[in-house]
Image (cartoon, rainbow, N blue to C red; front, side, top):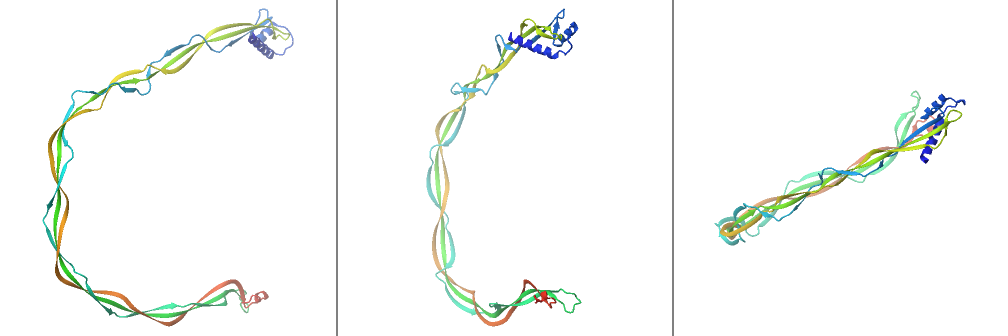
Length: 398
């Protein structure tokens, strides 16, 4: 009854808050109005106000839950395993071929070709030479060589400009102080006389004739390859298999629930202001249960595996039967070498005349030349005056 008392106290507070402040007088109409304002009903003689409060509780699990399962669905790839050894199938393929049987035997022989005779003249011994020097026409050239320069400095002025009135008796000029440097370089005239020279060489070369006889010799390889004839019978095979497909399905669980509705009825008397504020007796509490919405949950659970029997091709299996066949004999040429013999016979000597320019004969003579004089003017950064007219200008006279 603690919950009912709380409801009654709350309702009473609401009545006090809503009741208007009116002068104290009793009247059925005023009581009915105040009671209706707080959701209550008055008694026949308007002496009491009855207020009923209804509270619907939360849905709570009740009874046993029921579970239903959906259809199985494949999950993941199937797992296939072999359940038998390879089994030979009928109608094998039969083929016959010849092939080498063992290592080939090789015999090496030689075949000599037609000799080729060539003649070639060549030097016989060392050549003898005789040299003669022949002078040509001399030529002369001159050049001027500079000696060590000497310099002298002399004070001077530059950039002079008039600074007084044009009608003055003497012009007063302001100039930049400068240094005049005179450089004198002595010279020497060198005359070079060049006489070209030529060496004339007479060479006598003894000669002889080389007679060469070349005979080609070729290696010949004779190969004997043993052979055999083989018949191959090839069978196709089949292997039995079993494939297991895992499945899953949806489990749906429905849990029934119950909601309880609680109704609390309180009776109040009116105060001197015709407000229902005085609780009379104990509030009456009535409860009534009713079915609520079921709680539905789903989950994925394993289904029944599906096992399927099948077959797959296996490896080929072959039987081979071989019998001897005629050998294969082939010949091939290998490397060819040249057997060479030589002989010599005397030949006419060769006389050759050659001319060769050698270093010319050079003679130099010297004579004094005209000196080279150059001047250079550089300012010192100071100023001075020509024909000064004032004391300050005269203190800085050029």
